[in-house]
Image 1: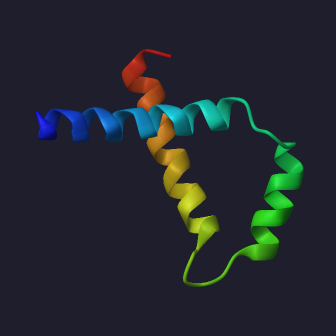
Image 2 (image 1 turned 90 degrees about the vertical axis):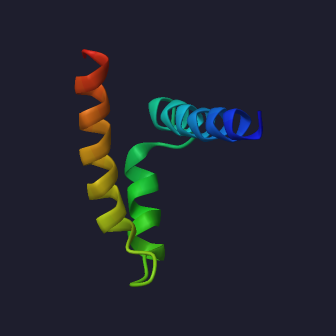
Length: 65
């Protein structure tokens, strides 16, 4: 039961992330400026956004657009 609960928790975290991206709380342009201003080599948010884009593209394809 714990494995199933942990698994569902991981999936729901991902779904919440999609909901956040689909309805951002602030304008995208502003968010991008802030991310660039706060980016550091240890965070590499620019690199992470490229990775996220690739994963989201895969998800869209898997869901059948």
